[in-house]
Image 1 (cartoon, helix red, strand yellow):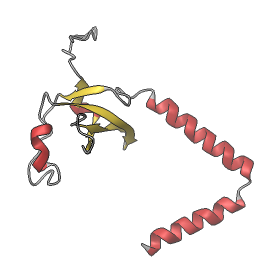
Image 2 (cartoon, rainbow, N blue to C red):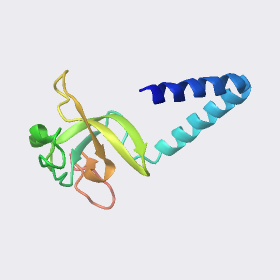
Image 3 (tube, helix red, strand yellow):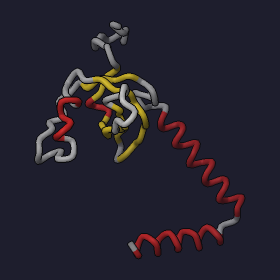
Image 4 (cartoon, rainbow, N blue to C red):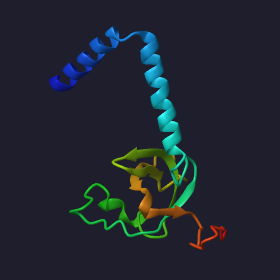
Length: 128
């Protein structure tokens, strides 16, 4: 933990040396890049999705998810709560029990999801 605190301290010291105008510009640029990147995400917050590909949940591969695997099968649906991008791929925090206030989210990569009710036709028409 002390390494982490030291890194934060060094970052803070560095930020004190950088002129505020440069820091503001750098933050604005990062926010812009993030905004532009997320335009390419297939889903947005509040989109309804369903699992379209086997997540291969076993006690060995996903021990934390194993007790919930009934909610994480092909055809199960949920709602996107958060969008993230990590190591070149979009991933989503998906609430697989939106009817419950105490439901937890699962972080699922884009390749395992499709729009709820989408039948896969090339023109993208929805079959709801």
